[in-house]
Length: 79
Image (cartoon, rainbow, N blue to C red; front, side):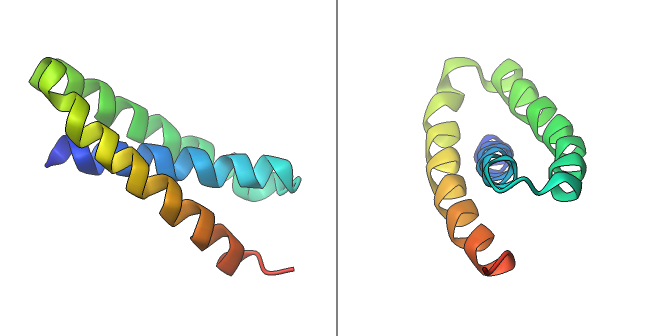
């Protein structure tokens, strides 16, 4: 479960960050960078802990995370 959560956080933050960069949102992009560092470490530690068996929960976490980030970014930064 922790591999899923780590991947969910990492991918949703990366997708959110990509939207920040595309829309030139400098302060949110700067702040998200710190959260990305922690999420990256979480995914790496999950890979170390579970090995290849972490691939499935990481894949599902990433898939759900990217969808959430796309929807959330539109709601947070309405034009």
